[in-house]
Amino acid sequence: MKLNAIASLVAMTLSGTTLAAYDEHTFGNLDDVLSTHIHLDLEIDFEKKQLQGFAEHTLDWQQKNTKKLVLDTRDLEIDKVVYKDSAGNWRQASWQLAKDDGVRGAKLTINFAKQAEKVRIYYNSLPQASGLQWLTPEQTATKTQPFMYSQSQAIHARSWIPVQDTPAMRVTYTARIQTPEDVRAVMSADNTDAFIKDGDYQFTMPQAIPPYLIAIGAGNLEYKEMSHQTAIFAEPTILDASVAEFNDTQTMIEKTNAIYGEYAWGRYDLLMLPPSFPFGGMENPRLSFITPTVVAGDKSLVNLIAHELAHSWSGNLVTNATWEDLWLNEGFTSYVENRIMEEVFGRDRAVMEQALDTAALKGQMPNLEQGDTRLNLKLNGRDPDDAFSKVPYIKGMLFLIYLEEKFGRDRFDDFVRGYFKEYSFKSLTTAEFEDYLADNLLNKYPGIVSVEKAKEWIHQPGLPEDAPNPTSDAFIKVDSAAKAWLKSGDITALPTGKWTVHEWLHFINNLPRDLSIDKMSQLDSAYNLTHSTNDELSFAWYMLAVGNGYQPIYGPLEEHLVGIGRRKLIVPLYKALIANGKKEWALAVYQKAKPGYHPLAQGTVENLFK
Image (cartoon, rainbow, N blue to C red; front, side, top):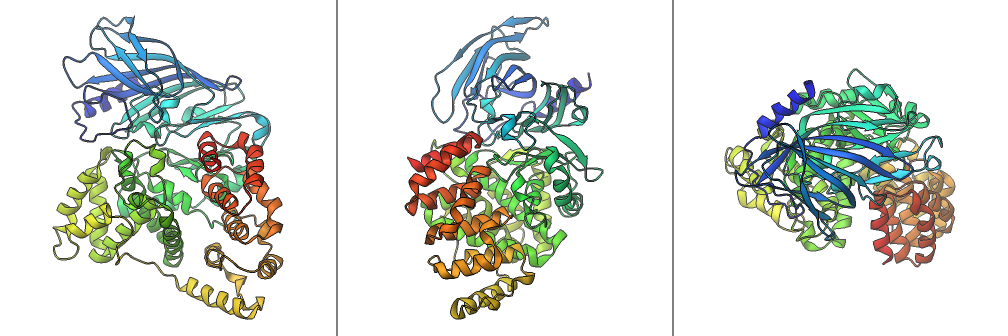
């Protein structure tokens, strides 16, 4: 009864909602009917690599005469559809599953005799579901139980749930998930029931979220608390190291609360995924999914945790209404991430991370279509995954830094706090944000930044001429030392003893791309860079080495490419290998690595070889 009461409460708050956004990536007839609550009853079948059971939608009809519900699906087998009539009886509904149209998947149309309060779709996913990865026991760290996890962003929820798959709408959800008894399941929800491993788990998400934030994971997971509000779920082999690496998470929460308002989601736990996870992290509410590649042993890469936590305000609380508005999620999140890092680890580190990000953005922009360097993208039917570059993240962050510098931090903090409060548990478009920005900042303090200037940032390609260019004093010293070494060849000119990982990354990323093999060997002999245990450093070194033909990297590089599936750390390497005459070698390595890559990573890499 408690779960139903929560669902009813949220349904009332959503009733009558008008969705201003048009999302070209959904078939859903949201103007006619909204799903306000989903209940999932699913069994995880590791042998068949499928989820099977039903999804029950609670419906809020927006139009009196409509008797049709349209849902998004991809690679789902539909068994039957039933609905609850006014007398409380479940009756068969007629339905049609259209052919797959490519990007959007297959439209599921359900017709009712009368408007239904609830509808159940009985179905199963298929092994090739784009939003799920299935790992055999041998592909996990402990080699004992299989592992399965979801990645629903951007439009992959439809590959394991029949749903109105758009960020323009929000749902609450509950779930019953059944697994083998020795497998623990967790979700982006209240995971209290997952503390006891018994193969039958109940989950509740009482806050309304867009469907891309519905998430599931299952495997040989143990649990360890870091604070009263935070904990780690992980395979036993990485649990303690993860706790040690991320034990500042509670401090991050408290610092962010003080700046932007109270955390709205109850607990904030982390799920450590296998190395095949294609992203650094995924901000699934209450349970961020995290790559093990950031467990470096020195907290040098914990800005990723700050980023996923920041999404609890920007993205999860206030959401882009379409994937063309992705920068509203990621630009704000990258900005808030950097503010968290400044609060917890100091201004110097925050500026170093700004500078590294800005350099990475400037390095990527020339390789993008000009239109894709705008903040407000035009996808024109392309897969929303095409929206994910450094532009929405870093150009978006620089725009907000620009506004902060122009208006002052106090005024800008007030603006951001008000923005998060105004749009809490809502989705908005870039146009709506522009109106809010003009009313609550630009026109409130006239003569500082014009509306036209804001539009240049949002709608014009590239970076404005007066864009911030973060500069770190530490990096200036690194550049000076690097210049002295390049001129003299004296390795003692490099004062690396106290260098942070950020200084090392700046050093490697700014070395000449045609650095001589002798100097590569000198660096490698002195610092063993080819065998670095920090995945970000390894990646930077391998990118340099592939470009200038430094041969000693190829054994460790193969281990790197086979051992992890994080796209940021593998895709540019495959590109570089292909561009530098190593296509056949790269393809052979990919064939070995492919079974351990997520479908998203497989698709991205295979497109390179085409």
